[in-house]
Image (tube, rainbow over all chains, first blue to last red):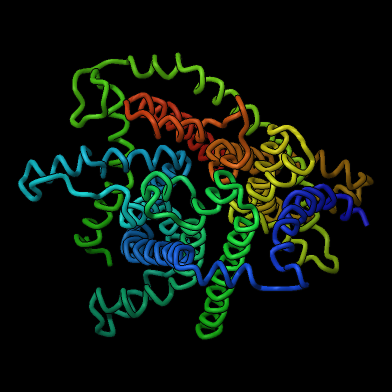
Length: 272
Length: 258
C-alpha cells in the first residue's frame, strides 16, 4: 500500500485546490429556486451578446489551429528530413518563443499592428495604404497573435511524428510514380495525422483559454470567453455568470479533446 | 528526397522569420533614444533599461514572481516526483483514473482555475493572496513534474532497482541512492520548465492579485494599458535573456541525460 502514500500529496493538492474549488462554483449553477435547472445556461446561450463571444472563441481557436496545421506541415516535414544536429537546433529555435512571456509576445504584435505600428508605416511608405489601417483590436489580430503563440507547439508535435516516416517509404511512393507533391499529400500527411491531432488539441485549447493575447490584441470589442469570465467575475462581480462561463469553457475543452481523441483512435485502427 | 526542395526551404525560412522577427523587433526598439516605440530605432541608449530598474512596481513584481514561482515549483516537484514514481512502478486498481486526475490541470482552462481559486482561497478561506498564488501556480505546473520526471523514471531500467533490493536495500534506500541520482537531469529540466511557466503565467495570476501583490506579467500588462514606451521592450529583452538561459541549461541537461 506504499503507493497510496506516494500518491497522497498529489491527490490532496489536486482534489482540494482544483476539483473542490471548481465543484464549488460549477454545482450551484445547476440549482435554481425550485430545484435543478438549466436556466442559467439557457439565459447565457440565448443572449446574443454572450453567444457571439462563445462563437468567436470557437471560431478563433479553430482558425488558429487550422492555420498552424497548414503552416507547420511543410516546415515540420522539411525539419524532419534534416540531420539530427541541425534538427535539434531548429527545434530549439522553435521552442525559444514558448519560454517567452505571452505578454511580451502580444506586445510585439502591438508594435507591429498598431495605428502607428511598423506594418502600417511600411504599407503607407510603399503606397499600399493611404491612411493607417485598423489592424489592431480586431479578430484577425487575435488570430495572428494566437498563431504566433502556438505555431511552435504544432511544429514540435509534427516533427515528432514525421521523424518516424522513413526515407524508404517516401522513395517507394516516388518510385511508384508519385511526384513530390502527391507523395506529400498521400503519404506524409496521412502518416502525420496523430501529430496533427495532438497539435490541434493543444493549439485549440490554448487559444480558447489564452488571456493576454485576446485582451491585448482584441480589445474590448472582441472579447473571448477568457476575457469575458474575468470581466464578469472581477469587474462586474457577477459570480454566477462567471461560473456559467467557467462551466461552458470546461465542457467545451473536454468535448473538443474527446472528439479529436476519438478521431485519433479511429485513425489508429485504420492504419494498424 | 535528397534533392533540395526550394519550396520547402522557402516556407521554412518564412515561418522562422515569422517566429523570430517580432522578438528581434522588440530587442531593437529597446535601445532607442526616443520616448516612443519607433522602427527603425533612433540612436542608441540604455536609458530604458535603466528605467526598468528604477521602476518600483516592476522590481517588486519581479521579486514576487521570482519567489512565488520558485516556491511553487519546489512544491510541484515534491508532490510530483513521488506521484510519478508510484504511477510508473506500481500497478493498482484505478491507476488510469488517478493518472487522468493528475493530468487534469491541463484540461481545465487556467482562467477557470484562477476564478475558482479566487472564490475558494481568497474569498471563502480568507487566506492571503500569496497563498492563493502559491497553490494555484503549484497546480498549474505540477503536470511538468508528472510528465518529465515520469518519463525519466520510465526510461530507467527497473532491474537495477531490483538488484539493489535483492542485495538487501530497502525500497526507500534504493529510491534515494539509485533512482534519484539517475533521474536528476529530468528533475532539473522539470524544475526549469515548471519555473519558467509559473513565472510567465497570466490567466491564473490575473485573478490572484491584491494590493501590492502583482506578478510581473500582470504588472507589465497594466503598464502597457496606460503607457506605450520602450520600457516594456527593455524589460521584455531582460525576460528573453532569462528564458534563453533556461533553454540553454535544459538543452545541456537533455544532452547529458542521453
